[in-house]
Image (cartoon, rainbow, N blue to C red):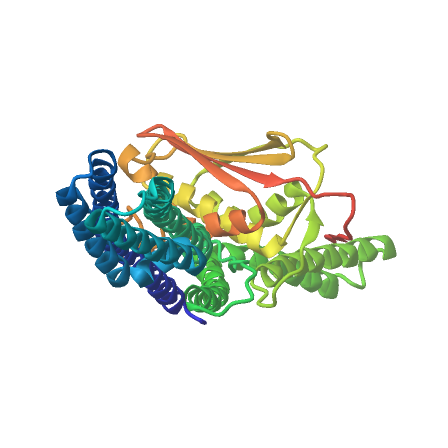
Length: 480
């Protein structure tokens, strides 16, 4: 029985077979009881015949009524016929020994009747009254015992019949319990885990379902299929994340070019001046110009280093990170994009925050997507446009990072959908609806969560909560 279907089918067959057996047993007892009731009626007739025989016997003894003697003989023959007809039934009720004893008493009684009839006809001798009474009483007692024993057996059969519905109810309850247990353990429990995993997958967190079971049925195969799907989706999400990184790089390419162009121009101008004036300047001035070239080269190198780190394709390790340093590297990548659009950037950092544990590139991707959304929300607005970034301690065990803008805001009816994949309020060609869903997935993967507050024409605040890195019981890496 490797499938739930086969298990349910076997339980159903067993239950039907058991119920069928109970019904057969029930009808067997009913028909048997009916036969026993008819037999008791015959036993009653048998006793009535003995009592009638004894009534005429007394009339004969006390009044010497020959007609009563004839009636006594008539009922004797009826009793004799009954005993032959019901011999097997009587033996089953009282046993063969008592039946043989009854037949002996019956034969003795017959002999006495024959003797009494002879004495009446010849009028010689005295009737054996005491012996007649003794044998007659024994036959009445036998008939009463026969009826009483049979009725006791009938009462036992009635009790058995009354137990059958109780057995049926108990067996039905047990069967339903087994079915419900099978449904809960084999279907409802794993389906609840699948529902939870599916809801998490819809929000961008692809975790396999952990469900230990030694059996192999439809639900287990479904869980295995889901886990394989989750694994594939996680891989696709990594690929999608990388493609979004490339898209983000394209968005602020002009800013990166400007970041690189300034130090390169400074290096070029300083080198030209050094060549032209080399013979006229002092050693100290030459050394100062060389140090300027090295500083500008280091500046350009840092820009390239940040860009390469952000676009790195290999899966990064979980490291202990300083949230402010991650934000610093993120802002360097997007600062020119902010300046080109005329947006002011304000920072309010808590410098004494404990480290978090995560992947620097993924967190940079999440922060860049939020900042790009803020830039696009204020891109076409006049007046003072501000992006504010604030870090500090959140609820117990969390670091909080707030990203606020003074953009157009998000409508209340759109607010509950902003993290859904492919949901976007931007015009066609300006958004895919994947940016914030990726942000949600990245933060959930880091064990954190996001809150959003927004007012139309006043701005939006994204609050990101990331768990503080645990210091005990685990080995952690450290960000450089």
